[in-house]
Length: 252
Ligand SMILES: [Zn+2]
Image: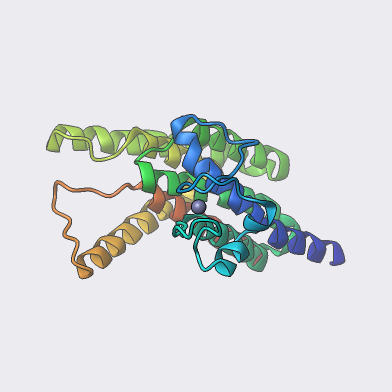
């Protein structure tokens, strides 16, 4: 029990720093920029930020969201990703206790990165989606061998079902409705939640997307039949929700 508690605390403590790193990945990976060992600079004045300027969330709050050197407003992006990473760790620890939460966080942080990149750039990079398929199958093989077959099936089903929908949409509407990245993300989703839970992922994602569209409408943004939202963030969110719900089911 004490070990599980320690594991939980370590996860919660490192989560904001993981979030800072994911923020770098989200901003830099789509442009092929180096991620490791970059020196953080203020994007306005170019001053190199010191360690005390880079404490997750706290530095941002302390400086009231402004660069200490030039006063330029710093984007809420970094504290946003850091807080999201903490929220993922917190939900994983609450649902799964300390030790199992490490694997949950691996999935959750990976999905956070993918969803956020898609939101900013309409892109789900293969270098992130394809390894996530493998990681799901490897996790099944290592921790839950009985689940390996349903999860491999889930990966195959996730890919083919969405590829079929995308092909149909192209034929009917004569334009792209779903990105090719979405099919690979659903394959990754299937590799984690398994074939049986895949319909729930699609359902939750579709509902979340409808809610978001309704929310945008309420704030005055009109989405016509020809405008679109990236679907990846909703697939990522739904995968996370269904994964956590499945854990709760297996515990109870
Ligand atoms: Zn500055």
